Amino acid sequence: MRLLDLEPQFCQRVIKIEEYSRLKSDRDPLAQSFTEDDFELVTGERQYRYPADTLAEAHGISFLCPKCIDDNGHAHSVVCWFEGRVPDDAMPGPGRWNPTGTGYSDLSFVPGAKSNSVRLHGGCNAHFLMTNGLVELT
View 1 (cartoon, rainbow, N blue to C red):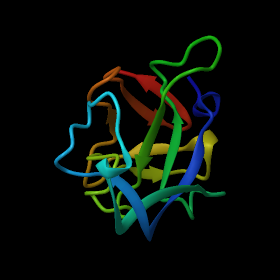
View 2 (cartoon, rainbow, N blue to C red):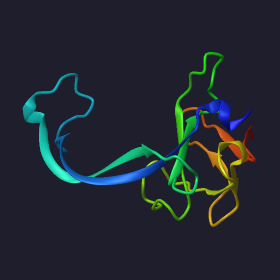
View 3 (tube, rainbow, N blue to C red):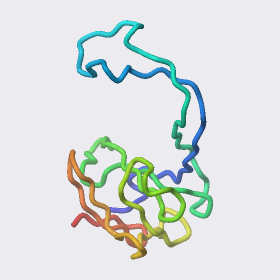
């Protein structure tokens, strides 16, 4: 399957410090309903993903799951952050990949300090390689 068939988008990871509302730690996240008293305002880091135009400026890439895509082009999204461009503790994790190529049509994940294969843990448990713009399920 070609990466271009999976609606790829190079992306940048941007961290912003901002105020946001979150469920208080002593509340049951599986409760059927919540009131305003169940939430608190906090200030902290929030991670955002913005489109990038080129591989050179990208921190990672998102695309549709090659295992789950159906005939209508529906699937969950996969995000692969690039080694050395996004910290190992950033989500999603833990993987980081070493990209080579000029764009979507010839992108490869090559061995670096981390693995060159992509393995999703949980959900569909997809496992695949990206070589020269082709995505091969293993």
